[in-house]
Image 1: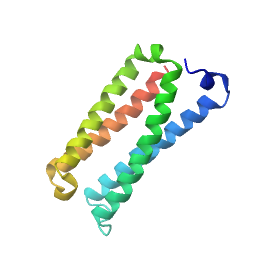
Image 2: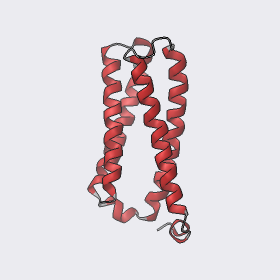
Image 3: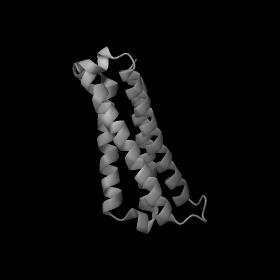
Length: 138
């Protein structure tokens, strides 16, 4: 158990808030980019929006991952036996593999059917990660 986080009354709630802000930055920016790729806000150039959105999404992921690891450190044994947590970690791995495949194949330059499908899969995976995250506590 990571003692400072369990002895300082405001520490764990601050981590939870940081985790939520990170998720909002990540998912919000991915959805904004997806909307543009699917034809919304056509006046915005995809490359410029992608640079901004993906940078903010990466910052959000970094916040969520760092705060998530710190929260995990407070109760690793309990979380490793929690089905929702294990499912969430599996979905995170799938989201990471999908993102790696998306960038490796140059999907942002192609914006073809496969790229659009990958973006839908990504959004679906991240929403499932959020849902599993909420189930962890119950």
